[in-house]
Amino acid sequence: MKLRRTIRRLRRRYSIRYRLLRAELSPSSRAAERQADALIISYPKCGRTWFRMMLSRALALHTGSDDVDYLATDVLGGSQGDLPHIRLSHDGAPNWKTAARLPTSKRRYRHKKVVLIVRDPRDVVVSMYFERTKRERAYAKSLGEFLREPVGSLSTILQYYNIWAKEHSTPKGFCLVRYEDMHARPEEELRRVLDFLDIDVSDAHISEAVEFAAFDNMRQMETRGDFKSGRLRPRDPDDKESYKTRRGKVGGFVDYVDDDDMKWIDGQIATTLDPFFGYSRPAAVGATTDDHTA
Image (cartoon, rainbow, N blue to C red; front, side, top):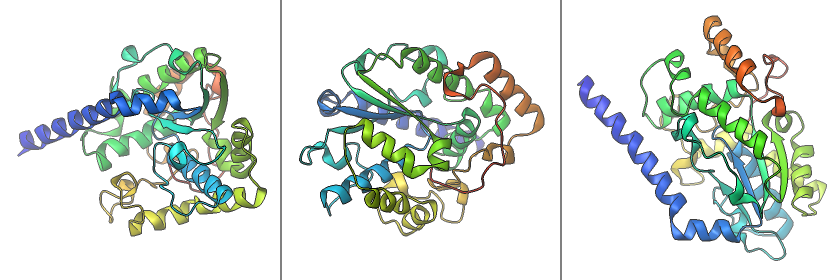
């Protein structure tokens, strides 16, 4: 029985990796990226779904569009009037690579505007653990063991951030968005990105977009299955850790990581992570308890 479960997890793991690779390398995906004016990029579990919902809602209100796929890779299909073509990018699915296998150049984006969303690596790695165990069901070990995994865990996250810190001037335009700032000032951060993209959206539409993407509303939509997509559907409705809108709490990692693992994580960050993103020091937790989608 244990062997069969292990085989199933391995199959899921390789199936997910194959699906992501096939999608990224498909002729249609490559063509869409070449045509895009701007790309929304993040390491997974940094708030990209939450930000996509806010941005798509703001643009839908701005253009008067009723038929909107809020989970589409191309925001509003990339073809609404004078709006720039905005596309979300998995940036090579870094969460399925070791640190050593991450591409070190971002020249593919040299003619694009890039919005890079980042989040405290401590929260990212804990959220990724629940993604692996609860949603993908491709991992069965403890959080402490996952933290030290070579594929898609802390070492990969830190290297991914370091590469972007070095390469952030490569794109034509670069806008850094921190999850913690979105959490504290969502309307201000959404406005800042829209200004970067040269899109003039009214304050009323921005406020409504922020309300639309609020955690409680997102959780209700996920629970009801409003989007009819596995990307925003709980794996187990009775297990809150299996929801896409799991917690999204700033500093929530302290509820899961023990003292010894926390010391190890902080040591890795202090000695490895570029200070460009502002996460090099031990995180100040407890500043807020509001939740948003990850």
